[in-house]
Image (tube, rainbow, N blue to C red; front, side, top):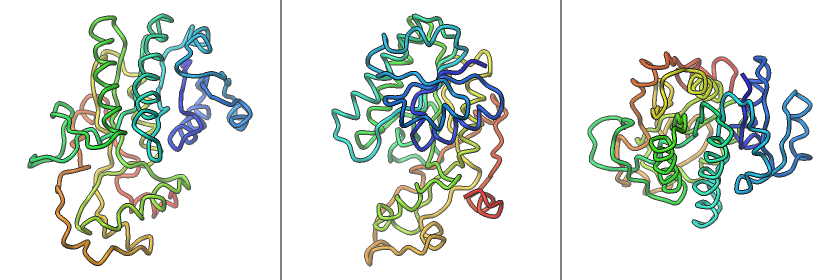
Length: 280
């Protein structure tokens, strides 16, 4: 496939792009600074230097593309306006450019944080009401709404993939997140997915026909508790962590749809299976 990827130097993209290059796909990546992405060029990717909000930078490069996989996003450490510009405005700009270039498939990487906390008595499903609690998922939810409108009104070949906490392949994500978890109730669980399974889900979304407008949760088979992650990484909780209230279904999702419609099966069904395989 001819694939156009954004966010290729981020945590997900920097592990996703080499995987699909190794499988023989032709990959163009949109980057702000080509010099910082030369290592991807050396692996076979074509670098397109530009800005999401400036489609004239990359519009021609979209010609002949089978799928756009949009991973670029701003997460922690940015203000609300910066998150909006990147996650919402940039996504709309890219989608309109893809429509102009008649790209048939547009995969949007979202987050399971769009569900937020609530009174559900089960894992979160794709059609549930969204209750995002902070800027990152709020802008992702807004982007989902805008892109779905472009799908309905202009035929954008949209596929939305809601990612959980992503780890593996020497990604420091877990270690970076442990300080945020110190105030969690140790019993709180969350779904995760290894980079290999994120890549699997993205490529299934990009290659499966007849799923335009569909949304898919991605996750492994076994949510892990904060206590387990802390123990495995020699971290401790604050003294009052046990008294913290928590929603037992926050960050836990139902993966029935992606399993039934895309035949997704995690390569690493749990954090423990990835650890035992030496894939952390």
